[in-house]
Each structure stands twice: as C-alpha cells, then as structure tokens.
Image 1: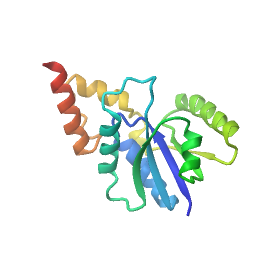
Image 2: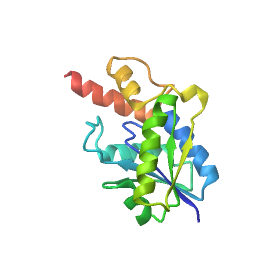
Image 3: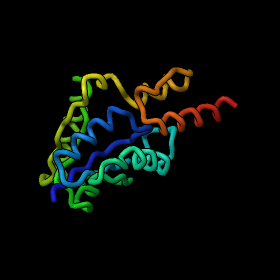
Image 4: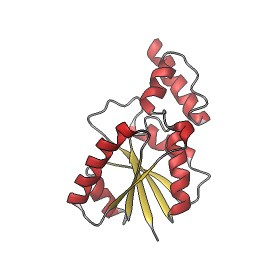
Length: 162
C-alpha cells in the first residue's frame, strides 16, 4: 500500500488544498492530510478545529484521512509508514522554500521522497493567509473554501468584532 502524507497548517483548508488532495488520492492508495502544530505561526483555528475542517472536507474520498502531528515531519512519516510527502506549489516563489524543506527532510531521512504538485491554475493565487485577510474584512471567500469553512470563518470573525 503506497501512502503519501500531505502536511500543512490548513488554517483554514482551501479549495486549492482540496484539489491537491483529490489528485493525490487518485495516485496513492492512502493519503494522510497531516495538520501541523506549528508553534511559529499564530493560527486562527485551533489544531482540533483545523483537523475537523479537513476531515469534513475529505469525506467523499475513501482513501483519505485527516490527522494532526507535532514534531518532525519525517518522524511522523515513519510512524505512518509513509512512502512520500506531497507539497503543493502555487508559484515560483513557493519553490525555493519548499525545495529547502525537501532537501532537509532528505538529509534527515533519505527513504522519504518529496513530490511537488501544482493546484489547478484557477487556485494558484489561493493561500489560507489571503483567505483569512479577505474574510476578516468582510469579503466573499465562498468560491475558495468549502461551505463549512466559510461558516467557521464567519463565526470566528464575528466573535473578534465584539
């Protein structure tokens, strides 16, 4: 069974993320969307909320599950008996950072491969950061996120305005 790990903050999950997940699900027997607990970032949603949003977004994909992890990604990949890491590349600007991460992961565990996948052209401008910025200012992000994520964003930002 070929397993790929798709790590990220997913704060929140976007349709661009889902595009990568759906295509990975066609290529691999098992896809684990690994929601990262990143101490450096200040996420809008808790780790549990993010994992829950991802899980709800992938219910239509039988070979995909959502989990969360802490620590080194390569250690998590080993625990899951993963074969590869999949990373999304939206633009050339993503490549340098992702390339550095891939090389470091290879140094830490040469068995684990990193595969880069580009989302559909219509999602190349999407990022969770941009989605949160537009939603915070009252803009319509409904074309870019699953409906339950839209509701979660509205709920978060209505609480912050009080």
